[in-house]
Length: 329
Image (cartoon, rainbow, N blue to C red; front, side, top):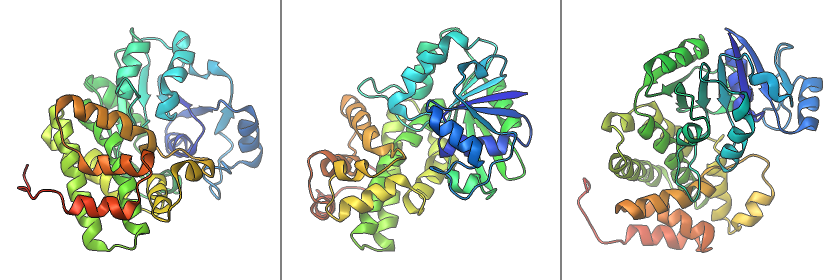
């Protein structure tokens, strides 16, 4: 089987390192200089420094790599997802399984990534969302990892499950595409708040409370949008939330820590090469929540720090003194 990965960042490269154990894989990069550098150095020096790449993983700018591939995987930031899908749409056929490995929502449309795939690839029905607790830094180093392949088409999910699973990378199936993708998007916003918790010097009690109440926000919005309850206790839900909130690898967490020192989001992003999805995703998440009448105070707090330039400590205090309520509401 041939697999084409569209996106030469850390996650795309990490996926390629696992998939190559079973199948032929190629990576498309929009940046010719990066592709040449990675091929020459045999290392993704910007995103996965120290991880050596085997000779059979090749970076290219040739868009024809999707032609003849049984599986096409989009691994691009949500902000550019639609434009990249449009770019490759003329070359993709209904017989191919198309995968989104991007965790985010489009703004202002609030579209999930698989919804964008459905709109831009109207003939394609074999669409899969790939999500779960998966830091590229660990996947690329063969640290055992479990993930979810979600699709309304069971056969497509099974194809991805069988193609991507290795002794270090276990893939589960899931039919709840809505829940899996919303969890993937919202957990990045909560992770920014988790970074603020660390940056402010708070402890384990605070982090546990944040993760638990963050999960409650994910669940409230997800159920309102048609997600299944069980998804929130699975890998794409609480699993991904825990790893993103607590890991040293979390880009969103690093943004939160920097915000806690008083830096503005503009200052932080100017020094980052990698994308912290939660920074943009908080906008469509709150827009969606407002439209369906769901209260998301942690996500609102993150937005206030990012875009109203409120101080994280003051925002955290405001969260603690809100009107008291029943935990289950």
